[in-house]
Length: 325
Image (tube, rainbow, N blue to C red; front, side, top):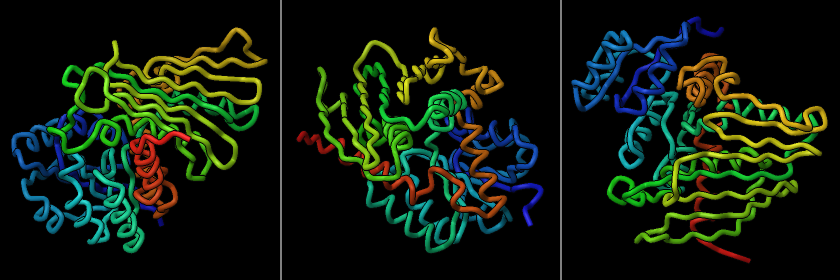
């Protein structure tokens, strides 16, 4: 029988989790955050006070041993999270962690196998496919049939030209992977063929990534990212049977079809039914999916488990290979 309240504990009290994940869970009446752990005690105490969390730790092992809970959140930089994830999954714990799943595809496969062996429910924070506006626009296009072509773009202007964690991980794997994952989600279940170009742009490392993806079912799409542009934006173009949707993910989307030849526009706030940032940007929905999967003991519920995220990591590898036909 499903529990009335899901108890979670947190490892990490940094900026991203404090801004998006803690408030998402605090907004759910059937979720209770029982403890928070961070190496910097002041951060843990700050979040404990803000989100009414009863226990604070600086040693995550002590927290895992002393608390009773249903799931653990591990929100840390990717180069630091692998050992903690391996430890928690080895203990049979359900885990939520941020994107990217790991630094390498091999590491993702290791954690996927461990989660499978231990029966763990997992979710990676690929939240773009959970954005209410994106889901609404996709549903409108698919009412007339499957999406057969798409364009997925992530653009930033990064003065430091994108050295993430002093170069421990590349731009595409660490950050632009968000929109690679969205592209994979828009295709079918197959591993797409990939033709790509990755290059520098007044920089010492690659900051421009362009790829054509072709899925076995016939869907094709184009992924593009640059970290040396004029501004930050995330765009999707979806094309179906005589219809399309043009989406500025964080602001608004417009659907065009026979029933709306002049276009039907929905704002991100309207689609979310809230102006709260964590709801508009998809964080609430990805967290809700994980919580319900834990509640119902249904590993198949989460769209971004380690097992499913292996494909996204492999597509990233293929793009980075920079191969053309």
